[in-house]
Image 1: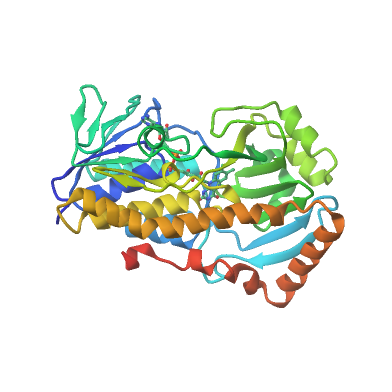
Image 2: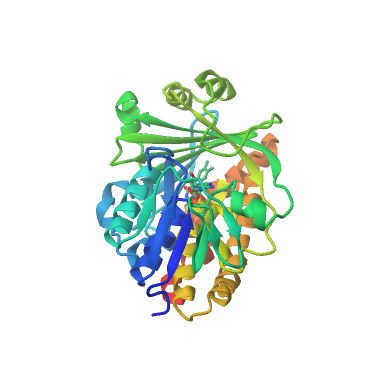
Length: 391
Ligand SMILES: Cc1cc2nc3c(=O)[nH]c(=O)nc-3n(C[C@H](O)[C@H](O)[C@H](O)COP(=O)(O)OP(=O)(O)OC[C@H]3O[C@@H](n4cnc5c(N)ncnc54)[C@H](O)[C@@H]3O)c2cc1C
């Protein structure tokens, strides 16, 4: 095994970084993870993990389905924003023949962190670091240290990408989301809801789904807005702003949004594709390599796929720079296509003209009734790939 005994640094303990650390440690690498945060805490919100991401978690030895059988919705309901009327229902999970999970990001992180511990990964928290030399794999971890390979999984605002892979600047898309969690006990009517709900309106949409065996409700409320807001987990907004943005929507939605105490406001930026993900002994992974809009709910899933393929490529030979190039070669086309698809989907969600919206909704309604699978089959190329069998 070519990863056996190799010293690898992973910068960033998000979903992508921890999955990569685990995949490499399981193949015998000595992996150290450096994370700037002091704790791997409750930062985050809900994540939808589709079949392609689940396949990687299973191959890593986690058992996400058995552990989360209460977090597998049977249906996605597309609803009108004003009336709350269900436009169409699309099958999920057993009905659609593909597993699909809704997880709290903190729960998935905790499972990955425990598996990393068990596999011998050393994690250093409170350690913000940077890559000093891409050719020699030197990282500023006090004291500076050289590694056989350095994986920068340092997120959407990746310092490593900015310093060593500089591309064109991201552009604000004119859209931002509030993310929030509400205890289900504060909103008992939610118990009636079958699965995921998507409310579509002009220039806005809301995704609502249950987490942790229906004890929490996850909300993502997206608005088109001219004023610029930053990307990331750090900006808590006033609940009044969230409520005002959806004040003319149906009572169910208004009541739900009224329960969100600490909405996180997150600006959506379109990131141009990078020309490279790998240089010398350093490779980008996850959002650091391919930040994407959440319209396909694939950011974390792509990070999981990256992790598996990266470890497989590093395990094939002793030339680390060549292995990292192979990883880039295998992953970049697919992740870039998902990035583009996510960007394109934003237009379907927010049709402003009522006639266009009616057409889209009617189309969805008819398609949903006649052949619900057609609505989801469009994206089979995403969900059907199992990188653990391909790489
Ligand atoms: C509204 C919204 C909804 C989403 N929904 C979904 C979904 O349903 N399904 C899905 O698959 N994806 C979804 N995503 C995307 C998903 O959240 C991200 O793609 C994924 O979490 C990225 O993981 P990561 O490990 O690449 O980065 P992160 O989770 O951002 O981790 C990066 C880590 O690096 C650390 N770090 C940064 N700089 C340094 C440094 N210098 N030194 C040390 N550590 C550092 C950070 O502290 C952080 O812990 C959504 C995103 C948004 C905005």
